[in-house]
Length: 446
Image (cartoon, rainbow, N blue to C red; front, top):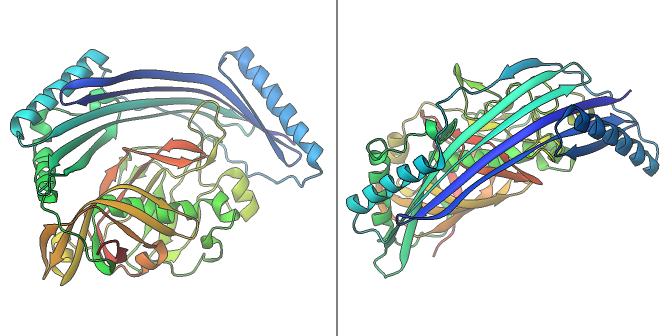
């Protein structure tokens, strides 16, 4: 029996960059087309086209079936009984009317001018704004018929100052939300508190001292905790990577974190509100549900597609997603976060005699063993329960499992961001977040 899915997909993106009041980038792109994927005789066949008419879809459907049949030349293969999973519905974000490029430039120029007047000691100010809109219409042979619309907007503000040694220091601040740039409030009055804090941080970083290297007590700020959840623990819980040998494969039912840690890949709703990247049905037409990856420290389940669920003898979570019209769906995260706890951030810092508060990261890498290394672009010493001097750019590293097992406090705040992309053969819009964590990890330094 052949399983078949077809997808009409349009992706609109724009990106503008202003450096010290000068527009240096102004781009708009649109990708549209159709794709089809067939499962026959144990093999997948995929085809795509930029023609999303009925004729184009009929053509790629035929090509996808032929491609699946062609793969059978590699030998006989058992055909998996793919989970049925049917969903019908339409989900579109209804935001403000879109604004044009001219108005975007005007808003950026106002913000850049305001920063120049308010922070005359800065060497440079960069403002980058972007939005993107995915519209997907999916039908499957199991009866699914879904319209999904995902929209997100973002702004990066980067301040550059001169440090005490004459070298430049910089920090980037992220702002993000659902919808288009029309839905993102970039007015100076609205952003003033966040930008004042960014300015305070960059001035402190200009006086930064080296970190003390080695294993340290750290308070991971909300941004770092979100990245740890996504990069170091989320990817090893994607079922295709588990089947490929991730260390988590043999750990279901075992303790991988402190009992203070519960980690969920959220489908579309958190505490009664729609999350930043809502997925009601994935790109296989499966109704999406939350995947509770860790519950009170115990590894409980993985994120699954139809195929990986069949291989594992479980049910799909609605986690198969494709970025471009020409991409095949892969198991991907959606909105991954550690759930908030009972502690205040102030009390968590107050309980550290000698350690570090890690605030911001610039990049990072992790593998299927849960080993990770993240760049740290903003952090402070903690001395006798008080924040001290900023430290120079450094790294934080370790095993996510060991770091999560060492957690002895989880903050009661919840932070979300959808400013970046997740990379895994193809990019993907995701959101991540969580509370602050107090734990043990290795810091690079002297």
